[in-house]
Length: 294
Length: 147
Image 1 (cartoon, rainbow over the protein chains, first blue to last red):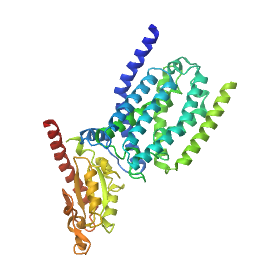
Image 2 (cartoon, rainbow over the protein chains, first blue to last red):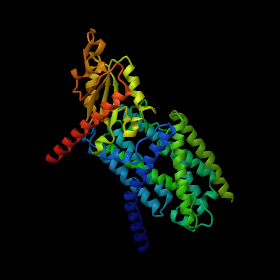
Image 3 (cartoon, rainbow over the protein chains, first blue to last red):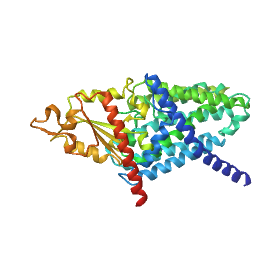
Image 4 (cartoon, chains in turn brown, orange):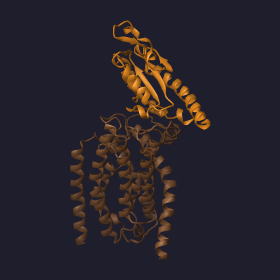
């Protein structure tokens, strides 16, 4: 009984720490992305803190809402992201972290649906398809992590003799593939684009403005930190140096995502769903079979 | 400087422009002028935008559109008339269908004349607009505190 309360308090502490630190780190990552993207396009780009300025401006805007509940849905989404991050970074269950962060995505979808705007509804429908696309691979990735490390608990990775990546290269590649969908980056920015124009105006966030839109931005920051954490944990083993390696891997993954975002045009949802599931079945399936026989 | 002036997002609407000014607006966003240096993003969505760039004059068909975009934008907001047609109607001012500049329909804060308006003029106008945006933002904050 004591142990359960102990663990719960630890997760809660992790959630609070994540809720404070992740927006800061995520904001800097987003700023870095804007800067790197601009350099890739031969531009100077905005200051590093531009995403922070954007959010501060959005908070100062007038309160206008179509449905009256989208702000509440987005608050729920933020809480779930913070909780998912707290579970992960306090060394908790990877599978639980994946499920709870999907709850955040579902609240985001509900927020978009609540406006009843055709653009937002289409965006929400596409966001649901994105969830459908990436979820199998995320689950298989967690299963491979379990089979390689013997536990779903992230904390156990710090006692391993070899990092999980030694046994899960196919699953990691598959995870990198769906990460682009999870981060809503081109070629899979179907539901809402980070860049100017698309056929859905702005997709899921079309009817959101001011504080609600600021919450969406902050949610993106937190999600980025969490997902890059997932990528990094594959390189953790019982050696403190591995934390540095994990951070380097996370940053490299972020750079790869920016590069993909800048170099590929948006695909149709059919292609996204098809490829995400093929990748999940091939990469995840092969990896599970391999691990079952090792 | 407040945050309103550090991240002015624009929405661009082509009234009945010949596309000359539209090209210049987009040129301002391209690498040569790169207005994203100042945090300016071209959003396609009035609800996300702070600055409304209108090119071309207003006619009977697009009055409702211009009004609707303006009304959907969230306070504080600024309107910039880009090009002489958007300012006064320009060479089309006495066309049977042209009503005149954008200020016949919505309040305009900054006028940027030119045919076509040069990217430098657009950037100057936006910088002026940012100043007005800042004032409006402060007024809104004061009103919120008072309420």
